[in-house]
Image (tube, rainbow over all chains, first blue to last red; front, side, top):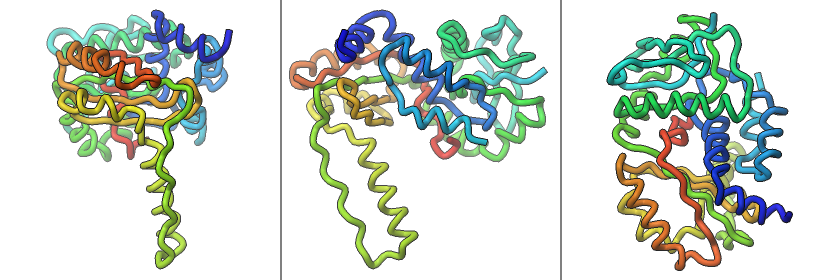
Length: 66
Length: 226
């Protein structure tokens, strides 16, 4: 399936909710500490599962810096 | 035990704060006029769809019980009351401002899809009479502003502007996903917002906008804290 068709179908299904949850919880919200525990590999797996890259990977990677 | 932080509030929730994503009781910790909602956890939760949705459910429940909430990034663990106070006290004035902005409001999210990004005005070169440092900063400022522009949404603006109190946006330029736009609206106006998006769909074509929400105001955390 072409990536764009898949993304469109995901947005039309209930997965759109999970997609937004991923975006909201992993790339938004108040950052209080550099110790935010987000495994980059885990995030990548989520994105692979959702088959659409919603947010810039560098924003997530920033959390891994000391 | 460490504090797992869910959200910052301006006031205590109506009723019981309830439990966290691990069924741990939630506690309110006052710091500088802000209330931190924390649960005690031996270890932070792993990232999974289940834990993300459980965290979101806690934030949603809290949001329904207060007028103003700032969700905290998933996975935020602080080692005790002193670390929590250190993380919040110096930022309390800015956090209180942000809580005032989101009071009585909620977030709608628009995903903008299209085959190709609309042409953006080129970033004009920075004038040469600035020093190298000022020139660099000015160039960054212009590029940052450009990254937040979503000209594809212009046909929708007339319908959305009366509903929108604040906006953050982020360009992806990875067709079909072109941009994500986050709008802060008054609580209870989500149906009107969704109607406005639906009514403007024809004018947007071939670009397509998918609206979701209402959400707690995740995208309206103070940016300088990031």
